[in-house]
Image: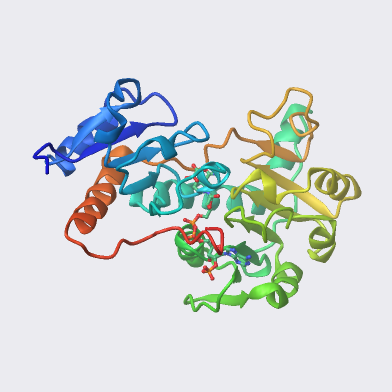
Length: 314
Ligand code: NDP
Ligand code: OXD
């Protein structure tokens, strides 16, 4: 037995100074935090809070009790062939991350609904021209993924009056949303969606789901907001759909290769808005509460929430 404090190792995504350490000291003063650069004895690490740890690293921590993903997505962990499968992985569910994604989705739905790509192009040409605006009631929005983030986005979009559709793996009921599920429910969602938002996790089943077949089922000129993972999009198919006008406008926040290579045609495409995977970010101040709550549950022998099921892939 040891009386040392339970220790949490932190490997962050971007440099946030001591934001995580400070937030965890407030939320869980009983936990010792250790920065990535101060690992010390691997046997002393009880918990790891990580984004893109080097493959094989987590296996080298013999007393690990929980792996916390700093992101909602866990593909940065499941891609590690040596990820210890006997240690629960908890994905990030925290109000700051949800709020950020909600803001980004609402902003981009409104951006495309109000033809802002066209107006930016007109401004570049010094062209003063009004485009005929349709009401929100005539612009259905389809959301692929009705989980934490997709549901929050749908709830935030509801007051604007867009007809809303959502798609999940299992049946769902979300007020004000026509819910579809399973492979058999996908076509109906696509056929309805004048704006399509992808908020799916990247799994074996969802890889490449935004392909030529899917684009062909959208109403002509539909907009796409891709905020799940770059691996959902078959990039050549998207370029072809843009060139034919089948897809009319796109927001791409996530890419197959990040950073997006300089030679990518998406950078210069007049119908594409590129953002560098910033749709949302985990906020240490609010996320520390979720991490602290999970550690307390584990220490009290209670079941953990938001544990990744590697069979289903998310
Ligand atoms: P959740 O696990 O809460 O929700 C995932 C949703 O996708 C669920 O509704 C699930 O269905 C559905 N789903 C999964 N597989 C399938 C399938 N094969 N067919 C149909 N539906 C499926 O995840 P979050 O909402 O928290 O996050 C979603 C994703 O958003 C993350 O995995 C990440 O990739 C991305 N993300 C991107 C960010 C960015 O900055 N761009 C920031 C944060 C997240 P069911 O409800 O039946 O389980
Ligand atoms: C996430 C992300 O998965 O930031 O949370 O992409």
